[in-house]
Amino acid sequence: MGKPVYAIDEFPGDDRLWRIDWIGGIGYNTSVPSEPRIDVCLAQLPVGETNPLSARSRRCQTKRVVKIGVGLLPYISIASVWRKRRPVVTDLAAYRRHLQMDTRSSCTAALGELTSSHNVIPRSSYLFGASWPHVRRTLLVTVWNKMGIPMR
Image (cartoon, rainbow, N blue to C red; front, side, top):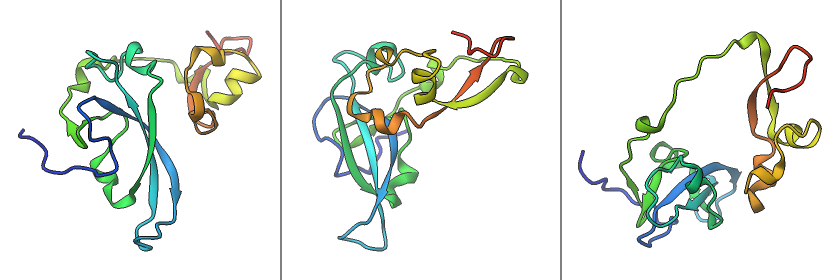
């Protein structure tokens, strides 16, 4: 596959690697009323890090939220990596792990519920910073033990 020909002007134009953390927050576009804009949160990967899913890359505190037209959604995805406004070809399959679980003991819960009511996931474990109001609504799959308490 050759170098992608498209670029997203709103993304950083520097030589650093940026990973898309989350997509959300749709709003009105005053420039083109027929194309709403959507928020995209970009996190800068640490120097030398190439795995966008590593614990080291997820600890990054340098983040930017940019607004792009919804027409660009087919060209972006969460965890994709960008440099100089263009996508960087990465082999995310190399970082995937297969997980098997018994779904009879699982359900979904919002991250905010698990950090506050059950304190299963201490909020201090995650460095979401200003993104927390958005991230706390994220649904997670939880696995419960026989006593109805989420497993750690």
